[in-house]
Image (cartoon, rainbow, N blue to C red; front, side, top):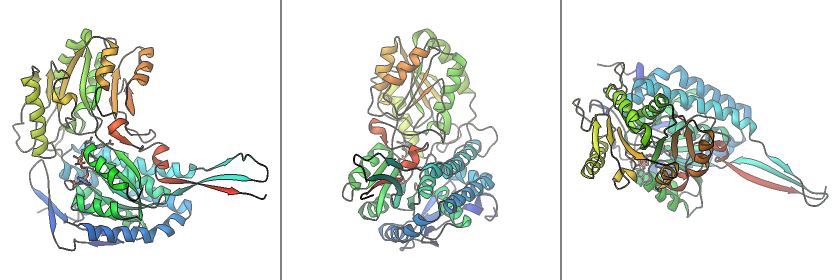
Length: 486
Ligand code: NAP
């Protein structure tokens, strides 16, 4: 039997963290958490709801005044400790992530590391969260603009980056002086609960970080209803994001929404072919295609189309599929069978409408929720994935002739998160920057997430930014004081 005090077991917490204590659900009910690569239950978490969330909010509201008033350098020093705790425990936290989510261990280690980088970044940024003194229109008056933490922040996160999606919210919140009530995804709650364990270990005051697991509707409902929750930050589907925006209206909460994507990946005839294929591999197959910025539609110009497809197919065939903990595995399982069925439905629709399978195309022989990395050619705008997020290892290739046509097809979606283009024409790169209706654009790059940059979408992909200086600004209110009679 595995010694649960070692390895990932050291960070596996089967309880919620409320007001500085590890507690179960009031009902005593729990939810099983399974490893998607094996189907084994790896532990249980409390099935909490409204009452437990209300207590967490109350704790966060009570902790807020003292935490907001803490010396800036004391808050910064806690963030430094949190960063070090993440990196000191990177291997165990990564294994925990892989067993509950399925991604290859190397990707999980990278996720813990980027989470730690966000913590360090915001520890640095908050020291520069400067106000302003604005010239007044009349003598004898001063106008001072100052920044203040928004208050209690409610956070809801998805399963595809169970640790770093929380990092991008918890780090700026704690840097700004906000207190936190977070709900991780039910499929991957342990990486979320590990943040509470880390916060406890480095000495955050009780009530500053609270983590609740269980019914999404009940927990979100309690967050929506509470006037003390001054901000809701959500990463997940556009459908749920819209519900949360509506729900936030009654108490006029600030909202940050990181929602769905439908990324175009455009390869022009003048592109560096090898670089474009490399970028497509990274952008398409990272996390088995389950990222919001994954290439969803590959548009390839006619002159380079066949050479690009041949190389993409060759590289795709070489991907090793398996349990994320095995050496050399590049593709883990999908999160669950629902995800497999979605990929199959999109594939079936495309084949029926004339697409051809160049490689892959079916469930993997390993069983469970493993799916073969797949390349499709002959994709058209009539196929469902032209409008829907695939969230799986399926790469549909569309052929195009002109730049105008590519931009028009790329923009023909309600989403506007990430877009990619490969070209060696500088003028075209600037035209794409102007023409593509996306919050983030990778020119000759398939991997664009970095702590220094503002991550976020436009259109129905969301509101607000994570990372960059903007990522801190979203956790601050601006106040202005007018000093007269000088
Ligand atoms: P999801 O179904 O929207 O779930 C995300 C979170 O919302 C989970 O914690 C979930 O809880 C919770 N939730 C579900 N229904 C809810 C409701 N009615 N009210 C309040 N909360 C609710 O999304 P997902 O399938 O887990 O994640 C994939 C989506 O996230 C994709 O669309 C992807 O593009 C998007 N995403 C966006 C970004 C970005 O930065 N823009 C990053 C990553 C992912 P349960 O787990 O308990 O159901």
